[in-house]
Image (cartoon, rainbow, N blue to C red; front, top):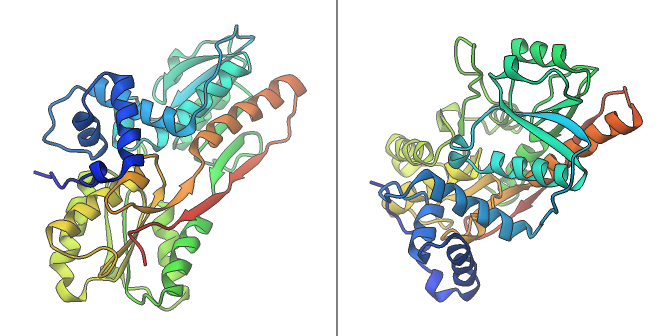
Length: 345
């Protein structure tokens, strides 16, 4: 059972306590419940609806953005590759969805919501499609048969007729590894997940892992025994770091590039249970900088991805297509920032 209290210093840290209290007051639950949900405490018995609301309020308070509902003039299919229950495992996509929804309301756009396997149910009178997540070739073809106005978010099918809003994960990987190398780390590990596209035979190697392997090889620092891969949940991070500790013992890498913040949260728990000091013995950097990262104990270093801006940008690109009749495809890369906190030194 994973019960490491990553928020245990909240009573001594007024700013964090106030934020958690704000969330608790708005959701109508106790401060302890909010803390345990944000800590991904698997022993907590609370419904998914309550968890979802807590994460949503945390995001809302972090971004402090509100949109006034207005009458829609465009009908756009919003196709998401995961459902709202699956978002609880990684609120990266929840934040993108919030960005799409808030900008759509502001810009008088009606969103018709579907999941990625619902292409047969998409209305025939839509003006365009915003597709969030990863889609295989068959799914992309189906979407293109439904509309000539398509914006992909968090993936780029490299199609000269579709727009895309992406993160440059090659740059993200170099940001992290260059930082570690500048701090004289020689043994650098990687903990990540697979791409799982439906209708594929096996999981696909994820691009962050690809860039990690190639850049570490370029720097003559690659040790494949330091690479651990499974899925992207908190529990996967916990189990993978436990395995790394067992495999390497005193030879454990001094730094880990972790492909997402939920994975990094699990890694921190495993290191704490093994009495391995962070960052004195092991430094950790995650990816996404979700709103709760700065409230962890110790506060998590992470690469900030402006996920809400990604969603907003997708709506703006769609409006360009619909109002200006733009036909030249655009690919927009959203800038990232390395946020160094107390899991690195």
